[in-house]
Image 1 (cartoon, rainbow, N blue to C red):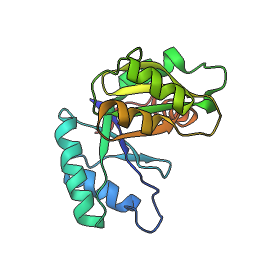
Image 2 (cartoon, rainbow, N blue to C red):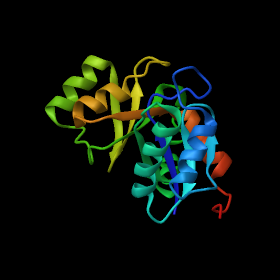
Image 3 (tube, one colour):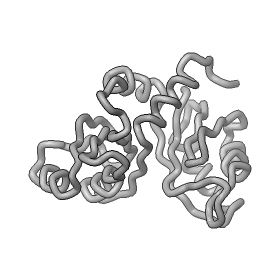
Image 4 (cartoon, rainbow, N blue to C red):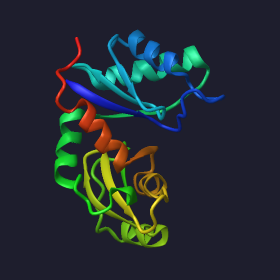
Length: 178
Protein backbone atom coordinates (compact mmCIF):
# COMPACT_ATOMS: atom_id res chain seq x y z
CA UNK A 1 0.00 0.00 0.00
CA UNK A 2 1.24 3.47 -0.84
CA UNK A 3 1.34 5.76 2.22
CA UNK A 4 2.25 9.28 3.21
CA UNK A 5 4.05 9.92 6.48
CA UNK A 6 4.37 13.26 8.25
CA UNK A 7 7.23 13.69 10.68
CA UNK A 8 6.36 16.09 13.48
CA UNK A 9 8.46 19.24 13.90
CA UNK A 10 10.99 18.65 11.12
CA UNK A 11 12.85 21.16 9.02
CA UNK A 12 15.30 19.02 7.09
CA UNK A 13 18.74 20.51 6.69
CA UNK A 14 18.47 22.70 9.78
CA UNK A 15 20.56 22.18 12.89
CA UNK A 16 18.75 20.10 15.48
CA UNK A 17 16.63 18.24 12.92
CA UNK A 18 17.06 14.90 11.16
CA UNK A 19 18.62 15.26 7.72
CA UNK A 20 17.07 13.95 4.53
CA UNK A 21 19.75 11.24 4.48
CA UNK A 22 18.81 10.22 8.06
CA UNK A 23 15.13 10.03 7.14
CA UNK A 24 15.69 8.00 3.98
CA UNK A 25 18.14 5.67 5.76
CA UNK A 26 15.73 5.27 8.69
CA UNK A 27 12.95 4.14 6.38
CA UNK A 28 15.41 1.87 4.56
CA UNK A 29 16.37 0.35 7.93
CA UNK A 30 12.65 -0.16 8.55
CA UNK A 31 12.27 -2.16 5.33
CA UNK A 32 11.27 0.55 2.85
CA UNK A 33 14.33 1.20 0.67
CA UNK A 34 12.49 3.22 -1.97
CA UNK A 35 11.05 6.17 -0.07
CA UNK A 36 10.65 9.64 -1.50
CA UNK A 37 10.77 12.79 0.57
CA UNK A 38 8.66 15.78 -0.40
CA UNK A 39 9.78 19.29 0.39
CA UNK A 40 11.92 19.71 3.51
CA UNK A 41 9.24 19.34 6.16
CA UNK A 42 9.44 15.61 6.90
CA UNK A 43 6.82 14.47 4.40
CA UNK A 44 7.63 10.98 3.11
CA UNK A 45 6.04 8.75 0.49
CA UNK A 46 6.55 5.03 1.08
CA UNK A 47 5.05 1.66 0.18
CA UNK A 48 4.35 -1.07 2.72
CA UNK A 49 1.88 -3.78 3.59
CA UNK A 50 2.67 -3.05 7.27
CA UNK A 51 2.83 0.77 7.49
CA UNK A 52 2.34 0.99 11.25
CA UNK A 53 5.31 -1.30 11.89
CA UNK A 54 7.42 0.52 9.29
CA UNK A 55 6.70 3.91 10.86
CA UNK A 56 7.47 2.67 14.37
CA UNK A 57 10.77 1.15 13.17
CA UNK A 58 11.61 4.26 11.14
CA UNK A 59 11.06 6.50 14.20
CA UNK A 60 13.58 4.43 16.15
CA UNK A 61 16.07 4.21 13.28
CA UNK A 62 15.95 7.94 12.54
CA UNK A 63 16.43 8.76 16.23
CA UNK A 64 19.39 6.38 16.43
CA UNK A 65 20.97 7.81 13.27
CA UNK A 66 20.34 11.50 13.93
CA UNK A 67 20.04 11.78 17.69
CA UNK A 68 16.68 13.53 17.18
CA UNK A 69 13.44 11.81 18.17
CA UNK A 70 10.42 12.74 16.12
CA UNK A 71 6.89 11.34 15.96
CA UNK A 72 5.81 10.06 12.58
CA UNK A 73 2.15 9.79 11.63
CA UNK A 74 0.86 8.27 8.41
CA UNK A 75 -2.19 7.89 6.18
CA UNK A 76 -2.87 5.70 3.15
CA UNK A 77 -2.16 7.76 0.03
CA UNK A 78 -5.54 6.76 -1.46
CA UNK A 79 -7.29 8.29 1.57
CA UNK A 80 -5.35 11.51 1.10
CA UNK A 81 -6.29 11.60 -2.59
CA UNK A 82 -9.97 11.16 -1.68
CA UNK A 83 -9.74 14.05 0.81
CA UNK A 84 -8.12 16.25 -1.85
CA UNK A 85 -10.79 15.24 -4.37
CA UNK A 86 -13.46 16.34 -1.90
CA UNK A 87 -11.81 19.50 -0.53
CA UNK A 88 -9.01 20.47 -2.93
CA UNK A 89 -11.09 23.08 -4.69
CA UNK A 90 -11.49 25.13 -1.51
CA UNK A 91 -11.94 28.81 -2.38
CA UNK A 92 -8.59 29.75 -0.88
CA UNK A 93 -6.55 26.71 0.06
CA UNK A 94 -3.92 28.86 1.85
CA UNK A 95 -6.13 29.10 4.92
CA UNK A 96 -6.52 25.33 5.28
CA UNK A 97 -4.36 22.79 7.10
CA UNK A 98 -4.45 19.02 6.84
CA UNK A 99 -3.60 17.40 10.18
CA UNK A 100 -2.70 13.85 11.12
CA UNK A 101 -3.22 12.75 14.72
CA UNK A 102 -3.55 9.55 16.76
CA UNK A 103 -6.95 10.24 18.30
CA UNK A 104 -9.49 8.38 16.18
CA UNK A 105 -12.20 10.50 14.58
CA UNK A 106 -12.75 13.86 16.26
CA UNK A 107 -16.34 14.85 17.01
CA UNK A 108 -16.32 18.36 15.57
CA UNK A 109 -19.65 19.15 17.25
CA UNK A 110 -18.60 18.24 20.78
CA UNK A 111 -18.72 21.22 23.19
CA UNK A 112 -14.95 21.12 23.84
CA UNK A 113 -14.27 21.07 20.08
CA UNK A 114 -16.55 24.06 19.52
CA UNK A 115 -14.93 25.99 22.35
CA UNK A 116 -11.37 25.28 21.15
CA UNK A 117 -12.19 26.17 17.56
CA UNK A 118 -13.73 29.47 18.63
CA UNK A 119 -10.75 30.41 20.81
CA UNK A 120 -8.21 29.39 18.14
CA UNK A 121 -10.15 31.15 15.37
CA UNK A 122 -10.43 28.05 13.22
CA UNK A 123 -12.99 25.49 12.10
CA UNK A 124 -12.61 21.75 11.63
CA UNK A 125 -14.37 21.38 8.27
CA UNK A 126 -13.98 17.61 7.97
CA UNK A 127 -12.49 14.79 10.00
CA UNK A 128 -11.89 11.09 9.70
CA UNK A 129 -9.93 8.40 11.50
CA UNK A 130 -6.62 10.01 12.43
CA UNK A 131 -7.02 13.18 10.35
CA UNK A 132 -8.76 16.53 10.20
CA UNK A 133 -9.02 19.37 7.72
CA UNK A 134 -8.99 22.75 9.45
CA UNK A 135 -9.78 26.21 8.06
CA UNK A 136 -8.05 29.04 9.89
CA UNK A 137 -9.79 32.40 10.07
CA UNK A 138 -6.51 34.11 9.18
CA UNK A 139 -4.29 32.87 6.34
CA UNK A 140 -0.88 31.76 7.48
CA UNK A 141 -1.94 30.89 11.00
CA UNK A 142 -1.21 27.35 12.17
CA UNK A 143 -3.96 26.52 14.61
CA UNK A 144 -4.76 22.95 13.56
CA UNK A 145 -1.96 21.12 15.39
CA UNK A 146 -2.55 22.62 18.86
CA UNK A 147 -6.34 22.27 18.54
CA UNK A 148 -6.13 18.62 17.50
CA UNK A 149 -3.54 17.85 20.17
CA UNK A 150 -5.82 19.32 22.80
CA UNK A 151 -8.86 17.43 21.51
CA UNK A 152 -7.11 14.08 21.17
CA UNK A 153 -4.66 14.27 24.06
CA UNK A 154 -1.85 13.14 21.77
CA UNK A 155 0.60 14.53 19.24
CA UNK A 156 -0.49 15.84 15.86
CA UNK A 157 1.21 17.39 12.87
CA UNK A 158 -0.11 19.52 10.04
CA UNK A 159 0.70 20.51 6.48
CA UNK A 160 -0.90 23.38 4.62
CA UNK A 161 -3.49 22.34 2.05
CA UNK A 162 -1.41 23.88 -0.80
CA UNK A 163 1.40 21.46 0.14
CA UNK A 164 -1.04 18.54 0.10
CA UNK A 165 -2.38 19.62 -3.28
CA UNK A 166 1.18 19.71 -4.71
CA UNK A 167 1.95 16.33 -3.14
CA UNK A 168 -1.09 14.67 -4.71
CA UNK A 169 -0.46 16.37 -8.06
CA UNK A 170 3.12 15.10 -8.07
CA UNK A 171 2.55 11.52 -6.89
CA UNK A 172 -1.13 10.89 -7.56
CA UNK A 173 -0.78 9.21 -10.92
CA UNK A 174 2.58 7.48 -10.52
CA UNK A 175 2.68 3.74 -9.89
CA UNK A 176 3.89 2.46 -6.51
CA UNK A 177 7.66 2.17 -6.15
CA UNK A 178 9.14 -1.33 -5.84
